[in-house]
Each structure stands twice: as structure tokens, then as C-alpha cells.
Image 1 (cartoon, rainbow, N blue to C red):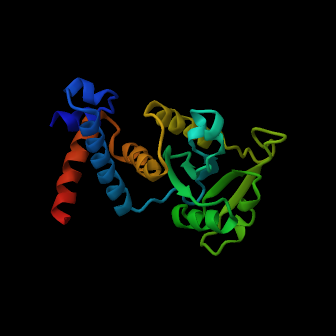
Image 2: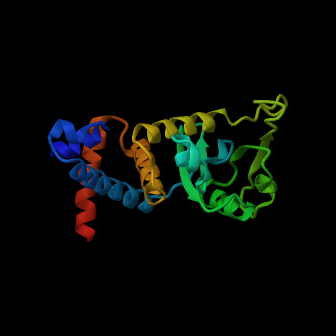
Image 3: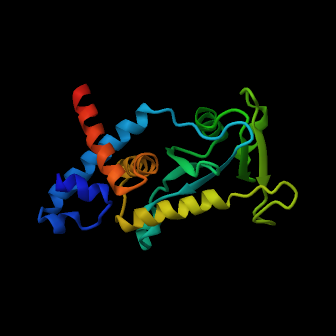
Length: 217
């Protein structure tokens, strides 16, 4: 029970506090993230809606954030972030590339029709207003070579960039991230946004979801 409570409180040093080995602590963390990933997979991850702003930006998360030398030559790991400015909730998904088809498929899956989408000027975002979705998207971009905020439309990506900064900080806090663990760490972040507004809420939700998961398996 204390292991679950410590995880719910998002405490680093859980193993030391509970006098359990690093290996045991890692196994518990992996299990909790498995529950988070499962729960996230069962809910409809949708952002935005008519008149609501969703900021979208792709970013790289890799070992090179923490190291130098040969680590800089490792393959970069790209993720797509979508952030609902109204609800202050985001979606982050690991992507194999930054091609237009990859990005637009995810946008159509996770951003509701009628949303006002703010992006930078990256070419893969072009044509969002022409996608077959009802009501159609309103796409406003900002040229970051000139402005941080477009003076005419007010479009900017400041919120999603701040969201990225918080995610990368939490990743750095938890140490290096292997590629195989990347999405599970992202899923935990999204889970905490939705089910862990307070430590007690996190504890109650993870307990009930463990029971729910166990009943299905």
C-alpha cells in the first residue's frame, strides 16, 4: 500500500524511503505505468472543439538532452504535442517521422472539428483547413523567424512550448529514457493530468484502476 501511495505522490527516492531495492522500485514503477497506459488507451483522447484553441508543436526527446559526445549521434525521438488552451490538458504521442500524413492523421484523430489550431510555419501543417472534417478546422500559424506571436491573428505556440518544457523537465528529473520506455512515461504524464489533480485523487484512481485492470485480465 505504501508503494502505491508514494507513487501517487510522485515521489523520487521511493526505494530509499521504503527500503526496497532499485530493481523492485523499478518493477513497481513499470507496473504503475502499465496501468496508466492501459487507462489512457481506453478513453477518448480529444481536444478542442468549435472556437477552442489547440496549439500543436512537434519536439525531439532524446538522450542528447542529458549527454554529449557519441549520444548526440543517436537517432532522435520525435513526439507530437497537442495542447488545449481552454482545458489546459495535452496529448503527447511518439511519432516515427514528421511527415504531413503522419501529423495530420493524428490531428484528425485527436482534435475535434471546428477547433482553432495554432502551429508554427512547419510545412507538414499546411492544408489543415482543407481536411475532410466537419466543422472544418481554422488554422492560424506564426512565423517564428519573425514573431513569437502573430500580430494580426494572435496565433502563438507559447502554451504548448511551456508544456514541452514541463515534460522535458520531468523526464530529466527521472533520468535517461530508453526508446522502449518513452511512450509509457508520456502516458503517465497524460494520466496524471486527467486522474491526479491531487495526490489523494491519484491514489484513489490508481487503486480503482488496478482493480479494474485485474478484473479484465
